[in-house]
Image (cartoon, rainbow, N blue to C red; front, side):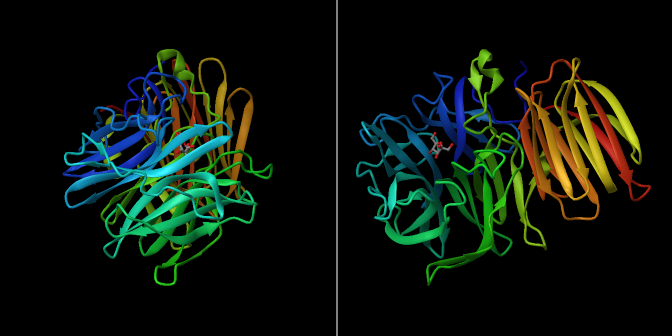
Length: 442
Ligand code: FRU
């Protein structure tokens, strides 16, 4: 199976959540949950890659290994921050016990962004707050008015998902501030991987609720709440929860703070995903980097970063699109871009043997149907009168579609064989709709 070329993949073994996303001394650093020696998450540490353009990624030595008494069963998810020219990683140490586990928050420091030393006084946050169970992990750190805040995912004693937060002046000593947000029980029993960030004057809490009920089409997903944080009165006033990505393989997103630019990567899998590349000695990858914006109707938008346009190598097609279009191409890294004003759009993809995917924008709904073990589908309701933009990125065995500037996004793994046949039918509202198809290379 071909390995994706413009996504972050592990050299070998297992990969899950993106961790420690940070810009440092001119480079973008992406760490991730890694077990390079196994195809399952047996001995989790932090893998590490760096890039100067968010397109080409260089492998660095593994940054953290699970080798201390407080992290011996895993250096779990965490984040990074730069202070006084040093890089600090704050992560969860996971230790299995006979009946359950212990999770503490720990610090590692680096002066070059490559070699890390765990702090000898670890853990820096030893116990969960009194009303939180031992499920207490994934610290995400951010700076606000010269202080460092940390959001941590958890579960309340009555088994509802929640996010709590702490404050620190020096990154070594932390004071508990209370909850950032919690659930009444209708949104899973544990909220993993919280992120707190600010996008265009709006505070945003992103997290991955786990253990969702039957009313959700999938048991794992990731979503967000937009609102305003009152740091003085310790209160985050927020809107209702919304799903961030409607695909079948999107989890544990993390945001990289690049000044006012906020760039999100996610694990391109959920804990149930298979990852058919296992036979080739690696398993799972990260999604494309996406830039976050807030729309005028108060939705979080995810658009593929502009840099990706540099990958366009050959124009495979460019044409007016106001009825239908068909094209057979070799399975290769591709971008498909549709612009115009459309009432309805239906895209079908077949490989040599059969149809593998259908995406329909129609009558207030967007539906993705995919042939996986069996046919599966996910739908989101759709508010605009017209679809004006659909951008699709495919990288041999990935499918990411961004509709209307990233208001509706679906990320899914696909496993086609050698050829792809695209069939598109549209009902257009103007005569100037266009389709462009590019082959991509690094
Ligand atoms: C999310 C997660 C995190 C945890 C990590 C362990 O996928 O379960 O909550 O820190 O993976 O690898």
